[in-house]
Image 1: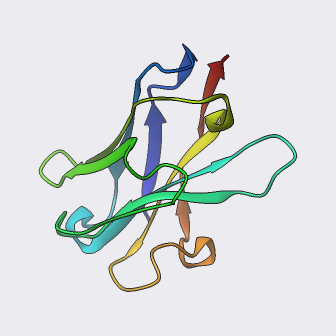
Image 2: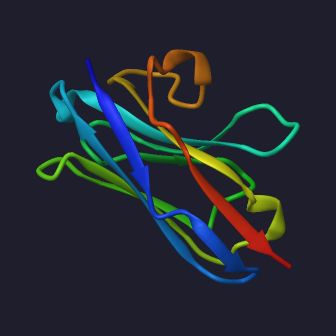
Image 3: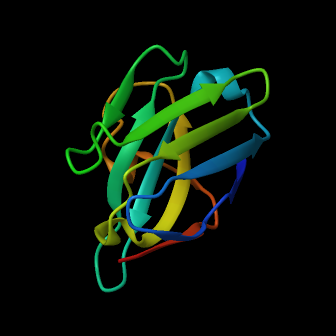
Length: 124
């Protein structure tokens, strides 16, 4: 059983930066793809970014491409999401998620393990 715990959310002005972290426990971290999803009020949870088990391939939603960077440290069992150029549309609860390595990293239904989420609020 894998447990995930996010941290780093908060309130930031538009154009600012924020770094989210996710610590994993249980399981063999290097066997898992890692991802970030987000859910804004009244909207469905959506894919933000993912990184494969080896840290060699990253994936981004079009809306965050060029502004967000996902990275992982397998030795520390952690994944991070560096967010720059934040916009009010980025306001949401951000969730860390993981699944055994494989394909379809953008599909929410592929992820059995989730963190509790961390709130990111961008003021305009």
